Amino acid sequence: MSRQAEKPLNDGPIIHKEKIIASKMIRIYCKKKHHKKELCEECRNLNEYVMKRLSYCKFGEEKTACAKCPIHCYTPVYRQKIKGVMRFSGPWMLLYHPLESIRHIPMPEKLKRPLSR
Image (tube, helix red, strand yellow):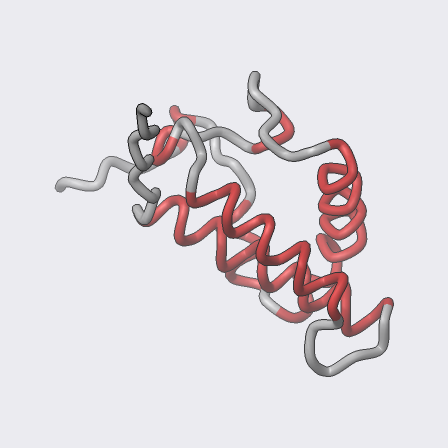
C-alpha cells in the first residue's frame, strides 16, 4: 500500500496576500448581497475552498492570476462563484480597502522598481 506524499503548503508572501484579498472580497460580497455581518455558510464554504486551493497552488510564489492560469484547479461551480464575488466586490474594494485594491492591480515588469538600491 503506497501513501501519497503530502504536498507542502504554500505560505509565502504572494500567496498570503492573495488569501487576504480573496477573504476581504468574499466578506464584502456577503455583507452587501446576503446582508450579514459575519460570513454566511455559503460564503464561509467558498472562503475555505479558496484558502485551500491557494495553499496547494501548484505554482506557489510564481503564480499568475487564477484567470490566466493554464491549470484551473477550481471546480466549475466554485470558479463561477468566485468570479461573481470578484466582479461584484472589485469596485467596492476601492472604497473599503483602497490600498489593497491598488496593490492588487498587476504592474508590468518594466515599471517595477528594483528592491535593492
